[in-house]
Image (cartoon, rainbow, N blue to C red; front, side):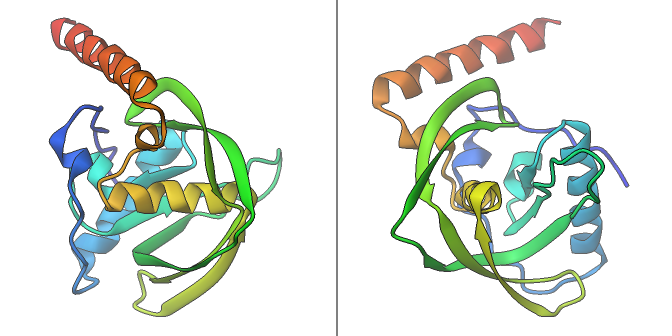
Length: 173
């Protein structure tokens, strides 16, 4: 497994719709493993392939946060939201591609998602709470959308300017 560098906003790859994965092969399985390792190391609870520069519809997540609870690493290939509740939840979201920036985002409280597992089997599950927020956030990445796209323009521009400054500082270091 390999830690992969996480792209920082603004980067055009983060605004690009990811391609459907036609075949689950060793490359896709390796990508899933690398993404899980990268997500845990960051640390984060979700990561989409475009965030590591791969424009494929693959995401990973693990929202188990309870002390002593067993982790639940998930790799979702070609995930799709099949149903969303009318009820909304508000979570303060952050993003590994937009470090140290957070904002409240309203999303459906529950979603039902279908996807293909790394073994090729069809999966479907209903997510709620943090899991629902996370899977929607990561699917947004696959569609070229960031959590800041839900914010008012002025706030979004302010965060983007902070990220541009951070990228300049990292480039000089």
